[in-house]
Length: 262
Image 1 (cartoon, one colour):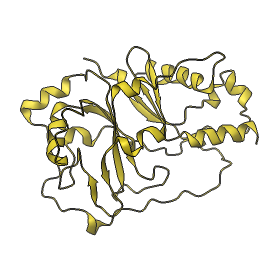
Image 2 (image 1 turned 90 degrees about the vertical axis):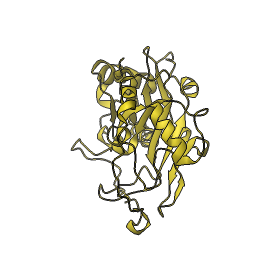
Image 3 (image 1 turned 120 degrees about the horizontal axis):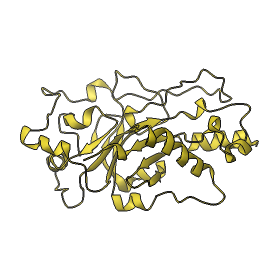
Image 4 (image 1 turned 180 degrees about the vertical axis):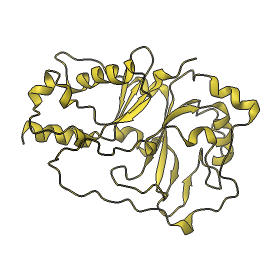
């Protein structure tokens, strides 16, 4: 296998991983296998529309307003209180305020008009049948006025709630609902995955430098880079090891929590 093929395989394999830019110039790398593990899942809606687990989602299938739009936002104490009602258990001792990263909002659409070596067609995800979805009279759950001050507070710890489609590599229509999960990863565990620079530098170290420049310095909150946008016949492993920007190997999701300031 050539260097280019090796890099492409690595990029495709890591495209659902997450870089989390934490405070104090540290960056954690969370592989898909970590946040998709069943032990972390707190909310799950299956392909048949059954609510296997509920947390933020209420019984009518509606989300709180503060988590509905942004790709990265805050989980406030009021959300945890509502989760107790939705899940039927008291999560206060286990789950804490933090950040909500919605990978469903970040689509890896192709942007570069370049030829790619992988000609395999994309597979369409199967939507949840409309007949399996609940009917609701209230599609907007605002944060109560006496709780809205919580929206201004920066979470003490970087506990992370990650929402993701159950089949992340498939394509979807914006007019349908699809099976998804939400995972919870405590700040203590995230800190165990902080990237430590190595000598000589690895591909990941080059990725970190890219993130510091194009996300940190630019104060970008979230993003996703499609690995197929970075393929090039002239790219080699040797180029990347010496810092070729065109061969930037960051090909996954990025959440910059440094953009939240008190």
